[in-house]
Length: 190
Ligand SMILES: [Zn+2]
Image (cartoon, rainbow, N blue to C red; front, side, top):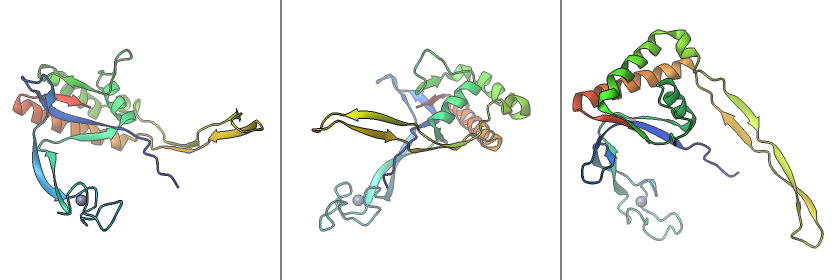
């Protein structure tokens, strides 16, 4: 069975503007970890007699890890969070953005309001679904004789968003905002 990654994801994270590059960056450190490509066995995934092409057989590979808290959610839930915070825009690309440091007190107030008002929060919960994408038929004329073929019909699972999940997002966002305010940072999502 072919495994398809249906979801891209969005991270919310404290960030600062790098004055040289103009980009938002987040503090990170290099960590010595198990190589992600060979799962630490040091063998190449294509040819087991060869050393892994990422770690060169050392089984360890340095990667960078954020030193500030992050919230990682699916794209769907990322857009839901932006709607909750009043930051979702219909006209713009919402996959990336920054809440400037000066706006954080207002966002914090909004989160605390959502935390305390069940009915405000419940307008953002969604039921999950388990459906099949529609099958489509088309005429394949590539061969000698035209043939009718069908495609699609894969299973699509939407986990939905529960109230406890939204509460968890709110708590994590409050933690992220606290750290950002402490350090004089902004909060980015990407
Ligand atoms: Zn490796």
